[in-house]
Length: 296
Image 1 (spheres, helix red, strand yellow):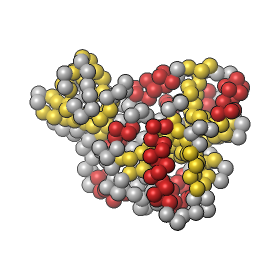
Image 2 (tube, one colour; image 1 turned 180 degrees about the vertical axis):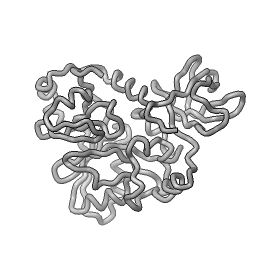
Image 3 (cartoon, rainbow, N blue to C red; image 1 turned 180 degrees about the horizontal axis):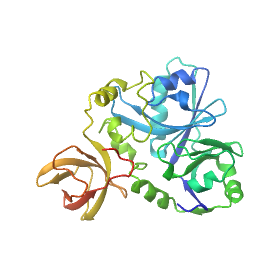
């Protein structure tokens, strides 16, 4: 990621959640501890089904008297509606600001050149009254700026950065093994903990109850985690969603995302699995990539 580049993520949406009960409301439904979020720290979190299956993932940032939620834009309306279901009688307001705010990314090096910035995931500072923060999932994803659309062009000029194609940023995300596109294809297909949420700082096992907490904790405490969402390198042919991934006719996983940056749910503890092996997948030959942060 070039120090003097900025990547405008047009495929991200933004919600704003605020109100007297906003802390309790979010604490009861998300996988992370909302009390970690402050003017100085942002966090990655998710919303699960009551059974612990994946629904949405997002970044939460403190802003004024509430919180900004940075989510894939294709999912923002569904996330908005799901959050309204849990609102009940809580004194909380939820606004969709996706037409007013944009998400942009700069390099970690550029971020660390600001006063008060430090090299810690989630570290958050203000840039001309708007939050800018080192990605809470992985520092190598750079720093995100959530800013009013009207301010964006002036900020680009002030930062002395050049707008680059967002594909370059998403290529970096794929190399790091972090899903950001096509997340709607994961819904109800796997447990949240299988999405590497523990490795990417989206789970807090000490915070208490939240939607989907029981199964998530059971998988963790009983060491039942045997599958993970991992990036796929296509060596030959093509793949599609739900294609089985096999080695010598032994199934070790299946494709869940088949777009430009494909991912599969992989049985990483299976005796037939090895990151050095080549696998068959439909009419394709593939490899499973191992992210540097992966602890297995």
